[in-house]
Length: 433
Ligand code: PMP
Image 1 (cartoon, rainbow, N blue to C red):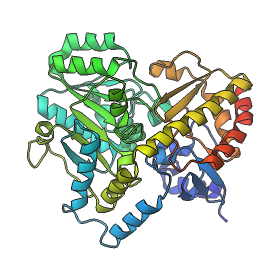
Image 2: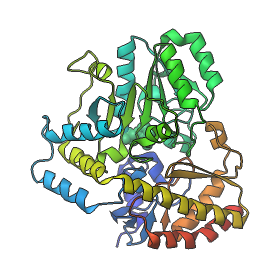
Image 3: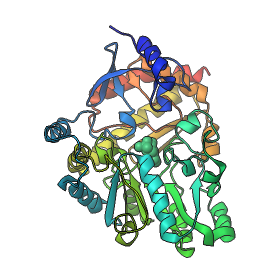
């Protein structure tokens, strides 16, 4: 049997850092990343045959659990008919219909392969629609790795402690204004100075790449109000939250609580592709039709709307009925409650924040985490100790304190027991830091 360590060193010899996405390398928590052989339901198995309860869920997509039999068989059937055609297929329309049905402000959808492409295209579309160049993003919000959006980004950029990225020309971010999250006054100031130059405000509908940092009441509505007043488009990034926080994403959750911030453009990814490489942007028809070939804003992709990916997305959205979200919400409450009890018992200070079933814990902080600076004040070393103790006990947590934790509809009583039993020792390890 080849060990994780052997596989990691072989990978490092031919792949930078041994990984194809930085956080996977365990850079901030240290140690050897688990090389995964297979996954089923709530479980993943590494190359050494060790089984873990998975709370990463492929960073969000595995809403139904890994390798849901109906999704897998739909993909297998599609694969037997051809892997990619580079031509339109009926499942693209089916998936667009399924999205439009749940996200009512969306009238048209364009499919791409990654969340990065979706947000990059959304920004280009907003610039094309308004004839303006400036965009506003919020510190600690992550929208993928396109040049203009890498300023003060969360996720792997936060994990690595980077201000941004080398290789991004100053000119590419010159038109990106970064504002503190949850700071309406700062946003108002930028709009009062430069309102007529701003093409778009892009925001995670509920940020989950600096840990889970919900918008304060009225924050998304304030963005909507200011953007409308100034002829600016609002882009709501639901790549992570879309079809996960609820059937209609965080937008739907917030709408049900009485606040509607229907943006001009949504971006989706992760769950919408059912675990396959697929993402999308959607919005009102008049804006979406500005994309080529109907409009002047260019965007394209050899593998866009791939038949295997769209089939996985259609099947996943079909299976993700109201019962799935109800179960996930109550399960998340149960798991959060257990986590809180263990941390309390060990005397660890912490802050637990959630958006529907999505949650994360900030160790060493007690006050509400409202923005990136608050999030950076957490004790990363305590998370590292906690992470390794949990891993040792068979729980796969995100290898960074800046990432959200993901449950799936397949997490059951058996996995909860493993989690419950692992917690006291991990909480004590965190308490020692
Ligand atoms: N937007 C958000 C909110 C995300 O969480 C992510 C990825 N975690 C992206 C965009 C980028 O998506 P991808 O990794 O598919 O490029």
